Image (cartoon, rainbow, N blue to C red; front, side, top):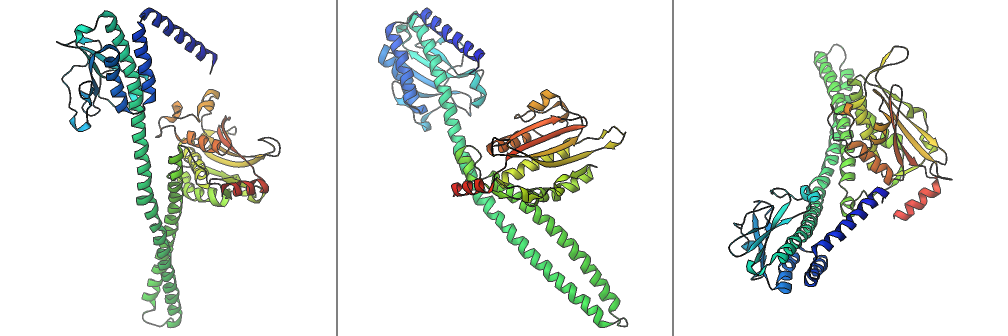
Length: 466
């Protein structure tokens, strides 16, 4: 904890101590407070908290009470528990006629206290309420509540509100987690498994193309067999050329579809991996990976036409670096998406600049370098650099650009939520690496560094993952 934070907490504790001294609660009231706090923590469910709320005034002060909590759909308070009937079943709960108020008020027979939640948590609970009011607490008969007890119940109801707010948030989060787990199961059953059908479809399509190629060959042989004087030669030759052209187009489209399928399947199966949702974090499935052939080249096949369409020159320095000199042990699906995010950003944010010779250039350049002992003795690093021309970031922007939701002023004209580079940092860091950004004269370098494993380290990690 930072010193300033500790000082703030220290002062807040001191303020609370002074407040309780001013409250001057009677011993019975202090015991009621302590009992409520103990049981509110002991019982984790909302239903138990509702019953504790009405039981404490009854046991300690012989007062009756009714607890009303806002219905998330209607935004109106509904009776959830009373000292008369205990916990009210969900099917029997109806909206109450009591008014919501920021201050306590009286009815003919009771005091009604507003239940205030924690304002810092209000936006996480989807109530259609005004401010932070989560409900009301009704104490009766009001004649038995003197001024000191009235003040006590104001403070007591505030404590109900804070505990109620936390348990509502916990319950909502549990429901969200259940929904997400069910959603993942549905995606696995209805999306990922059927996605395998497309692979079979592509296999069948390639077989058909192969049959067309054979027909094309047979037709070509027939043209040669008929001889020049055959009356049908011209028409058959025309059909042969048409078949050759269409088969080539069909093969090109099939190859593009296959690349798209492989790309989409890899990302879908990686991101929707059940382990991620069960563990609440990315769970790596590492394997040795040839970056050039398994990651870079498939992405280049997709992005080169898009770069060319936007007039961006691509300088691929990986071509001159042999892959055999390194072994990287990574989650191929997640690291592929790291590269994809960087290529995607380069496509959106690369701008034309004028170099020192007066040439107007619009360039994306990427390369790789080995950093000896970067992660300590005997553990080198592999640094991947992505340079894009454009306006250099400031040092402050470069330091923040990998933060969740951060977008520079120049990036706001492009669609996006500032999540891509945060994803890059997250994936690289769980691989034990680091990320960074270095402003340059004509643009910016975005980079990440991954640990370089030797053969023995890779074997140890592979054996440990089995």
